[in-house]
Amino acid sequence: MLAGELYTANSPEIQADQGEARAWMQRFNANIDVPLAERYQLLEDRFAGVGAVRPQKSERRERPMPDSTMTLHAPC
Image (cartoon, rainbow, N blue to C red):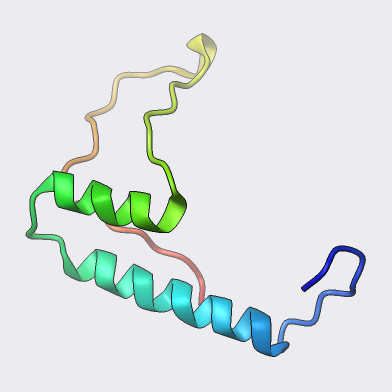
């Protein structure tokens, strides 16, 4: 889809992108038992970079860090 074009949800390009994203997410979630470093590699392969994002000081609260049981979910 080019800039300035109308969004068409059933365009072949968007359908292909959604299919690729769905397949990647299933692969990521299926690898729950692999070492965390390998899961981060899958993230980097998909998103070209992964890093910690620190919330603003006013938004911080104590929470455990994600571990190897993390999964991604998105409406498909």
